[in-house]
Length: 340
Ligand SMILES: *[C@@H]1O[C@H](CO)[C@@H](O)[C@H](O)[C@H]1NC(C)=O
Ligand SMILES: *[C@@H]1O[C@H](CO)[C@@H](O)[C@H](O)[C@H]1NC(C)=O
Ligand SMILES: *[C@@H]1O[C@H](CO)[C@@H](O)[C@H](O)[C@H]1NC(C)=O
Ligand SMILES: *[C@@H]1O[C@H](CO)[C@@H](O)[C@H](O)[C@H]1NC(C)=O
Ligand SMILES: *[C@@H]1O[C@H](CO)[C@@H](O)[C@H](O)[C@H]1NC(C)=O
Image (cartoon, rainbow, N blue to C red; front, side, top):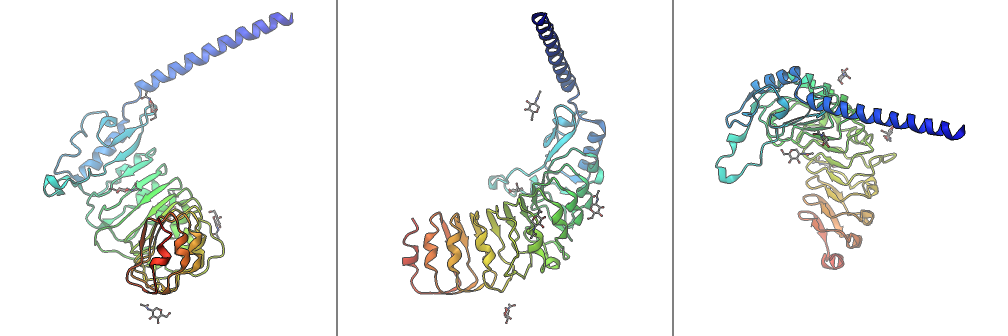
């Protein structure tokens, strides 16, 4: 009796297993059939394309029904939804002559808002002519990667970006001279997954007094680039330091005019630290020895005074050290002797 019920159970289990295998195979073939692009998303991309001037034909593959085959567009191979839009310019090759032929320019059509599954958007180096970053980008809720580096935007950073709670990379590196109005940073606290933040060149003076507290609410941050942001205020104390995983910190060219704050030396994972051109004064604290992972340290163009801390010699991973244009006195060679 016992024996036969085990047998029946075994048989049922076998049939059950076959059923699962069959259904899995069936759904795979349905998936493969469905992989073509969604009509509504193709129309949106087409409208977006029409908003751009494309003198060198970079979007010439954007024809036909299956937008998943268009260059720079990737779809989820089971749902057919567009998940990536990567229009990063191929690196300009000086042999090609004037390089400008590669550049797309124009505006971002709001039709992109239908791309609900878009998780990767790279429009870096497209020339948007000093216009405002459209605030509808904050509605692309699936975004994990947003790169508008060198994309010639002006105005302010739209606070709606703070709705992108899944964002891991945010690169708004501004290299042009288009006119800016003051931006604030309060919206950042919505980006709780952020690992990489680059806001070079934006005028963040509206957050001069609270930028550090805001950044301190991003415990997963690994890279923070805020050079040329007119932050002007570097708080000397911070009740508790949250972003201790930070590996890269660039706060250069912000005109802090203060001493080097103590909390900085608790960022023990730092590999790159750049504080150049900030009018930082006072001696280099002995606590510099805490930053044992540092490979690159730039303190040039400040007013750092006196003898160099001997502890600089304990930074045994250091490969690049910039101290020029300070008021350092005394011998430097004996401090640096131990740095192979
Ligand atoms: C679907 O995409 C996944 C992840 O990108 C990949 O590993 C897989 O091979 C793809 N399947 C097909 C049938 O293309
Ligand atoms: C953004 O794009 C630029 C090239 O246009 C690239 O240099 C940069 O590394 C990208 N940023 C990130 C976070 O990948
Ligand atoms: C997005 O952010 C803006 C400004 O912060 C806010 O007014 C709006 O309600 C947010 N939308 C969603 C869908 O969260
Ligand atoms: C540290 O980060 C957590 C998570 O974002 C936050 O709840 C907490 O308030 C932060 N602490 C400080 C001092 O900002
Ligand atoms: C820097 O701060 C000192 C006082 O702490 C002040 O006298 C000086 O004017 C400031 N310099 C700049 C450029 O703001």
